[in-house]
Amino acid sequence: MTINPASVEDMLSGGSAPAATWDSRPPHSIPVGYYYLGKVIREEVSQQTDLPKIAGGESTPAFWDAAQTRPKMQIILTLQNDGYVTDDNAEGHMRVFLKGGALQAAQATARDLGVKSFLHGDFVITWIGEKPPKTPGFNPAKVFKVDFTPGSAPAVFAALSAGSEGWAATPPQGAAAVAPPAMPAAVAAPAAPPAAPVAPPAPPMAAAPVAPPAQPMAAAPVAPPLPPAAPAADPASALMGILGATPVATIDPDVAAKVRAVYGAGYTTIPAIIEVFVGYGIPLTEAQVQEALGGVPM
Image 1 (cartoon, rainbow, N blue to C red):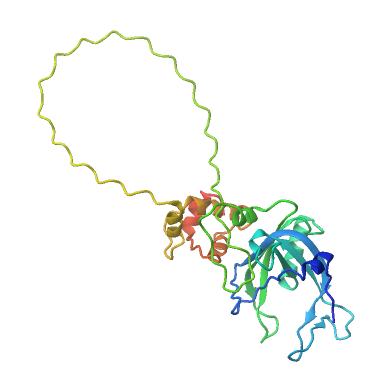
Image 2: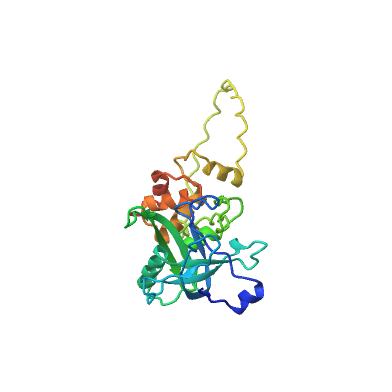
């Protein structure tokens, strides 16, 4: 039996943090595009285990070879995110197990960034799709994307975690997942250019002779008053319109700001951006993404 590392904090708090799951079956029903994110407060290495061969049996250490000389290892990251806070998880911790496709994605990101550890940085892992199994009859292999910034939140973390009240995506039923992300604040408009210098006043001109008064004309009929304008929709109502089933041609400024933040985090194609938003119940069209990015080359 393999014993996973435990800390004094685990022992004193009564157990480990909940574990992230990618199970697409009920009751979890995790969809493609789902993600976990947070600040890495602990990282450890442990040996993977194989499921019990009989009901009620114990898991056994996993190896790559029959001689059991090459153990299968995994990285366990503990993330902290206030969105994970529950009555049973007051610290808002979530454990993410990096093995298989998730470990490959983490290794690729570490190589690209030249980092040797994820500790104290901000970590986002997203399930982006599947690829056919190498062996017929086996399940498809999950494909992941990892975003990481040492010591400061990446743009996608800020876009999906910080923001305003009045909007929340509904997480899959039963999923141990990130809390509904709030809408990001709109991107600030660029500062206006300095005003042009005021021209000096023109010299006074001679007064024109006063014309004789014109003959009075019949008064034009008074037009009927216009109906009162409809009251402006409150932000929450306008946002509910955005989240309806039928996408509109014009994108809401708050959603547009979120599109730009996700684009800045590395999702640089229209299909990839749409896929992230669809995973959280926000239908977008290509035209809306193009409008939000304002002609940014894709």
